[in-house]
Length: 370
Image (cartoon, rainbow, N blue to C red; front, side, top):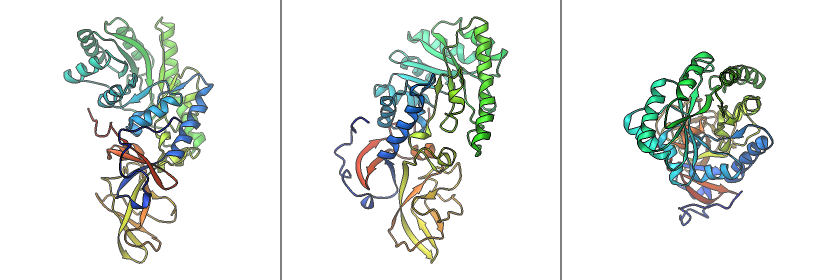
């Protein structure tokens, strides 16, 4: 990978052993992350679909640029604010995989599209009409991808005729262009059995592919189907008719996604310290839900698979059963169950190798909720 560059390259923590860091600190094992980036890039190197990684995983511009350098065609964002961060740092091909609404936010979207290729998901004529007006007023062009609900039951127009009618409407509007279809099989990414996940996710994605064929038969070119995830990259991402894979977690991994795709390494951890030993087999460390995402269950401890975390609800504490002979102050690596919400809680990530800090990367997109 390219050399490490960071605005914080003079940070005094660079060169320190991890054991000397304050806690909690968000860490990234650089070698493991780079291997993940290379593995995913190589998988798609000779395939029709290309990578458009999801920035929401890490929200770190430096890591996003490493993904682009490895071969990604652009970035996916969850929020307009994330896209603004990337454009400010020179990334100019972005899909906002979400609906953008509100007068002020649409004005921001249209201005952003003056200097970058910006796509955004829609699922209603009101979205298209409002974005068209904002883009015309700003003198820009925004690409619109129709989100098709393939089973998640969240946002999205229904497959087939409803999606076709919306595409026909979009194709007639000024200031926008019809960019294609977004389809996310998110309701299936946590199916633990890999073969079951493959079959069900492919059946779901086929609804989007069939919708594409229906649009093309009606004379509407469909430039792209964008979707998929780190858990379905090798099932839906290889289907004929799918063009972009919005995999995100593969760059860092977490406890849950590692269970789903063990071929990728866990590169992310939260360095914590033991602050209490209330019993022989019990320890308490200095992080809770304010420092580690827990939507997919309790975290785990790296190097101590036998340790048990019975629950994960406290704001600043994690209780560990079956603890070893750790002393007060003992540093440990906590593996979050969910990387995306964990990274959003921090403003920087300490990059390390061989137990030494190599660099400190800002997480510019953390907290960008609008």
